[in-house]
Image (cartoon, rainbow, N blue to C red; front, side, top):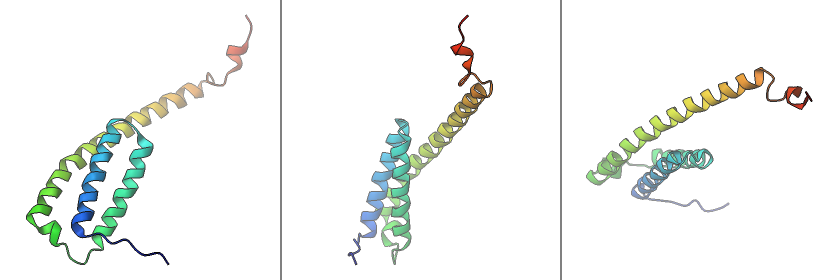
Length: 113
């Protein structure tokens, strides 16, 4: 069996901050595939943080400062993700509406007049 890589709680929080910064960057660029990959990575980091035996770093002044840096980024990410999702839903509705008229696959454009 492979060896499990161990990180300190501080290292995990620092990685969590970096991934959060990257999430914000990629959602701003609307690179949704990379964004979703980063969401998975951040979820794995959170699971690792939850398994740490103590939460000394998170409760320390340095840990609290780091978490305070993450909060506004999380809010921006959530807002932008909702906005993107709503825009995506509207675009899907528009495309489905267009296709429901039979225009997208219609032979109407193939007719000779």
